[in-house]
Image (cartoon, rainbow, N blue to C red; front, top):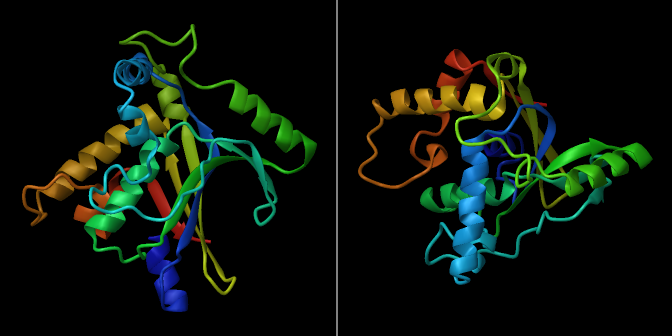
Length: 236
């Protein structure tokens, strides 16, 4: 949707896009924690998996794009006047964004650059929060929830998320696009996303492919999420 806005305004897509989590309230489940531990264990047994996990293009076989931001350190973004800290889902999300671009025939360019981080605000306080979050991961700790455990019904109901996407054009122009949702992002909203994706697939003409929602369904899914999942998509 950001790239649609960029083309409408400037006649071309943004070659550099930042995904930034502005706000979020939610929790982790034991299943997610177990998945992370299983992934780490698999990498320990088979080190050849490590480059795949680290590569932003492991889901675009035959295509290797430009170097991507590592997104693994605390840093200050002057353009957004905010400190940033690593985002736990970035390693998965970025791979799928690049796969979407590849499946669509690279409409955002073969030199497209994308990363995701968490915004923590300006000044010393923003820096302190970023450094604290970087040292305190959501999962991967001794007190992780066990399989079957997770956010309570009240926690799922009162959760939310607010994501900002920033598209930077070569001539300095900027496109900002916001996505906001009710409910815990992992266990209140994702279930709605999955359901609406399944319903949208009933009207899809896609054949037997392993794709992404963005590549197969595109704006049809956005409309369903707007209408039925209490998620807003809007240019800023």
